[in-house]
Amino acid sequence: QVQLVESGGGLVQPGGSLRLSCTVSGRTFSSFALGWFRQAHGKEREFVAAISRISESTYVIPSVKGRFTISKDTTQNTVYLQMNSLKPEDTAVYSCAASDRAAMSTFRREYDYWGQGTQVTVSS
Image: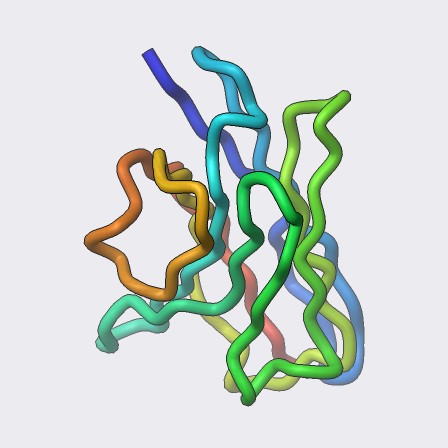
């Protein structure tokens, strides 16, 4: 059974940084493309970033480009989302997701496994 467990969320002031981690278990980590999504209160879940299975190509949405970075460590079975220069509008529950496809995707429907999420609150 594939499981994804996120950690690293919390309360941070505007301009601060957090690093989210998502550890994957139950199958070979390198068999997945991986992504991060977020859902703010009262809003739809939104794609944030993805990393492909093999080439490790990455993509982040324009609103976080230059501030957020997605990466992975195959020795730790973990995908990261480094978030810098955080803004109040980044406040959301952040979830990681794993896809059986090789290519990264921005579509929720193309992810097969999901974590429970971790709360990120940006406030002074």
